[in-house]
Amino acid sequence: MRFWILISIVAISGLSQGMLLPLLSILLEKHGFSSSANGIHATALYIGVLLISPFLEKPLRKYGYRPMIILGGFIVILSLALFPAFHSFLIWFFLRLCIGIGDHMLHFATQTWITDFSPAQRRGRNLSLYGLFFGIGFSAGPLLASLIQFHESLPFFLSSLLSLIGWCSVFFLPNERPQESEQSGSAHTFQRFVHAWKYAWVALLLPFTYGFLEASIHAIFPVYALREHIGIEHVAFILPAFSLGGIIFQLPLGALSDRFQRKRVISVALLIGSASFFSAYLFHHSLVGLAVCFFIAGMFVGSLFSLGITYMADLLPKQLFPAGNLLCGMLYSIGSMIGPFMTGLMIQFGANHNFFFTISALLFLVFVPLLWNKTKKVTHG
Image (tube, rainbow, N blue to C red; front, side):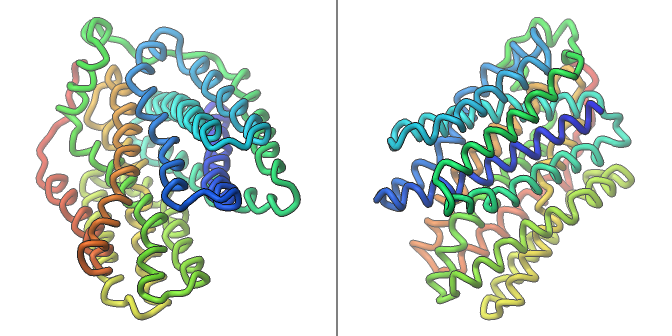
C-alpha cells in the first residue's frame, strides 16, 4: 500500500506540473507578456528546486519521509489555490517558485523512500513505475489545462483538489527515516554531496541529460519546426510521440535493467537514443519519419531519470541515498535550464539541424564514460 500511495501522489504531482506549463504560458500570452518574459517565468520552478535542495537532507534525516511529503504537498496545494486570486506576473512567478520548492520536497522524499525500501532486484521496476506514473500524470496535464475554456480558475481549483486528496492519503502511512551510519551522521550535507558525486558521478549524469533533452525538445523543437516550415498541427503530432515512447517502454526498460547488467542496458539505451536523433536529421523532410524517430528515442531515453536514480542506488550505500537523490533533482533542473539555451544557441549561430546534432552528441558523450566506467558500489558512508 505504501508504494502505491507514493506513486499515486507522484502521478497527481505530474498532472499539476503538466497543467501549469501550458496554462501559465497561455494566460501570460493572453495578458500581453512577451515570449521571452514567458520563458523567464517558466524557469521559476527550476530556480525553486535549486534554492531548496541544499536544505532538505538534514530535516529528512531528522524528521523522516512523511513530514517532508506532507509539508511539500501543502505548499503545492496552497500555491495552486492562490493563482486565481492574483493576476500579477511577479506574484505568479513567486507562486511557481513555491510549487518548485514544494514539488521538489515531495519528489525528493518519495524517490528516496522508494529507493530505500526497494530490494535491489526490484529497484529498477519500482522506480520505472514511479517514472511511469509521473509521465502519465504529466501527459494528462494539458487536458486539465484545456478546462480554461470554461473558466480561467477551474484548472487551478481542480488540480488543487486532486492534490489535496492525494495529500490526505499520506497521513495513513507510517513514518520512516533514512538509514544512518557514524560517518554519514557526522558529515555535513556538502560532504555527502561530494561523496555521492565521487562514487556515482556517471549515474548522476543521466538526470542532467534527461533534463537537457526533455526541456530542449519541448522548448526548442517547435522553433526548429517553424523555421523548417513544419506546421503547428504537425508539431502537435511529433512531440507526443517522444512522451508516448517513454511511457510505453518505461516499465519494460526498468525490468530489463533489473534482469541484466544495469550499466549495459543504460549504455544500449543511450546509443540507440543518440542514433535516433541523428536519424531524425536524415528524415527531417518526413512527418512520419520524424515521429518514428522521436518515438524510438522516447522508448530508450525517455526513462533516463528513473534509470539514473536506480543506477545511482546501485553505486551508493543507503546512507548516501538522500544526498544522491538531491543531486539527481538538482542536475535535472540545471539540465532543464541549460538545454533550451544551448540548443537555441546552436540553431541561432549555426544550421537549424544542429538541434538534432547537439542532442545526439550529448547522448553519445554520456554513453562513452558510462560504458567504460569501472566504478564499484561503495559500502561505507
